[in-house]
Image 1 (cartoon, rainbow, N blue to C red):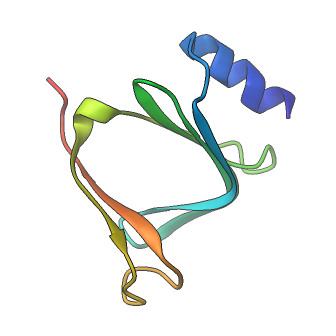
Image 2: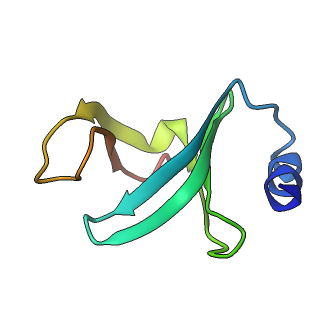
Length: 88
């Protein structure tokens, strides 16, 4: 959509990988559904549907731990689990 492309242009990077129809779960309680994940050379970018109007940009240096998670206790389907910290 136009919202996604304009937000990505602000980062001045081209995505190298894109996943559509993805959910973003924060602290096991906040769910942003049906968004898109864009991976660039420096960032992971989640953009929700235009109706929800939510975005999250993560500098890869902020990812302390990441793993594929298959636990239904975490989410109803397999997901990528990340722990974030200040990249400085």
